[in-house]
Image (cartoon, rainbow, N blue to C red; front, side, top):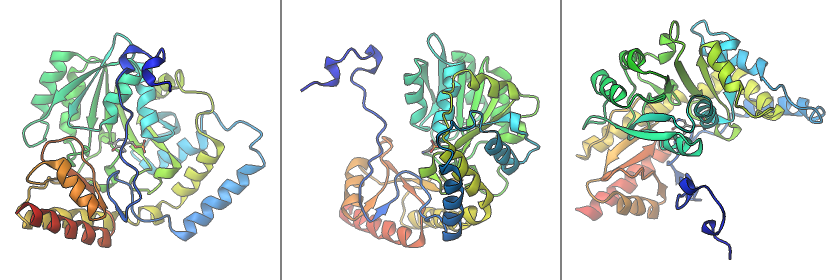
Length: 361
Ligand code: PMP
């Protein structure tokens, strides 16, 4: 049998494993920060109609520049953004890959503050961008001073900031973003995949865009919108940044079906985002319930909670899975991450946690 090692694959890819959050068929799946609520029926119908209207024209390529969708996204974001400041692709993963293709690449580097989103280093690897793992404080926080010192030391071509940060949960003060922009020699990407879940008072980096042409804010419809299967991510930045990613994007990367479905979903944003308040309630309940059990849980501005299991996290992950609850082992010793879903899913998670802590006692 041929193995990967038998193939003339790039040396830097040898021995690597692909991104792989397990997709297991268990009753309670709380491991990839999806929205647990299914798409509401009226929105299903609207998306179905929008898709049907495209079918006869599938002999033609879609709008390469997805202008109508980008205009809709700009309208959703507000902040006075216009279509030339917004770009869209198949998930924010693809947006970030395009950013690294344009601004990273061979001989260049990207810095992120770990633990953060595990795809950032993988996207760097795929684009031959040298990855620099920066550090966070002991409480997983990131101050302007810590971030600035590391950017000054490494002078990366791309800095990734993640706000709210996955897997730790907290949003960044925009002062950290502006401090990093002041010293970064290259692009600063703020990954705001979970922005819609932030606690009141949180300020998006979108507010910092005016006057900062090297700042990029990435967003997604995969989380709050409950549209992960639709694959639609986007960015907001200076129009010149949009021109830069157009140099590397594949022609017609966003199918006519994706564009139509995303536009229909956006037109029903109130129905889709209607679940956000309930999810935030479950997130806060998870934090409170875990703390009431004497376990440490990080504050969260997202739809997930990082919590301490008081022992080996991979054994704890297995025990929870055996109880029918799939959570995420992000490789942080002693910690696991759980997505906030429906009240019934929280019940199941907490029951499984009681089993776990009962076993450990
Ligand atoms: N950024 C962060 C921080 C994420 O957690 C995720 C999804 N897990 C993404 C980006 C990518 O999401 P998508 O490609 O579905 O937009």
